[in-house]
Length: 177
Length: 200
Image (cartoon, rainbow over all chains, first blue to last red; front, side):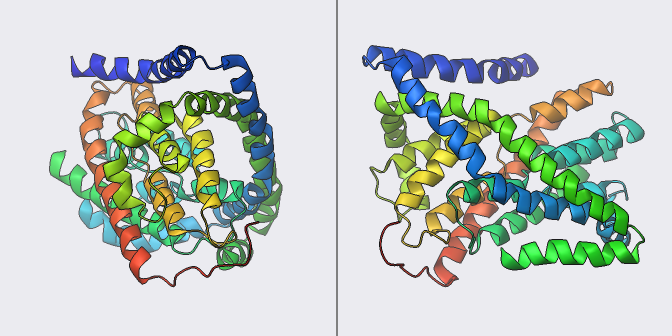
């Protein structure tokens, strides 16, 4: 019941928003086609203008991942985290999640395949991935789009929220499963 | 950002050298650069679509209506921007898109919101408090249904993947509320922005 309800929501959210916007525009007698294309023109400009910011951050992250630092941090953290039933496989996921969405999804798939369904590790990994966002990418794209290079406290807030998210994922998982 | 950029690159090179992975690190420069252009190009079409849709929503007054509905919330979170600013509506739309997991729509709308916030920014080079708050909302990644995660779980033959929804929602709410509170706290104690001459 709940499951099918959720499925309907995720299936219909996008079409519903599109219908709402177009119908509302039509009722208000907006020249839909002209206004749409005027707005859409911006798409190219914005996408291209974020490239320098994306290159800076994504090259940095890609080098960071290739350097082996993540495994090193994993070695330091794993004795502490094993007290909370966090297996060593999950630690790279924790570190990669804010850096790269596609890499995190890849690691999550690996974990899910090796740990198998219904295992604690799979559940914890799923909750961690589902409850957070690719902080560095979001910051690069959003601030890059308006040409801002001084982030002030934005990055710190993002990282602190990620840490709180990871900690609460571990606690919630230990409590429920 | 200067230090982060320096740190990511220089530390990676040194660590790569120590781990005997220097070659991988150097090769990853190309991979990273290629990937970022790929990401930007893949955004063009969907960005154009949603910016077009948003233009209709704005011209028809729909964005205005939505911003009026959520005004009590935004007034508290974004006390620096005027209540009737178009940014408020964009922020609301972007949050809604994120909550439903519509990342494709959320990014262009979010960028639109950033452009509106930039108009009211007193220093065009640094992030305003309103921007930091908006980014806090976004990086926390509040989402009602983690659709991709559920898809992976179904793929490995997980019997009841929807049992993951409730705990994920709990965790994402905790992270989201913390992000907003931390941003509010920093807003009070961080060095304020300096006004730079002229509106460029």
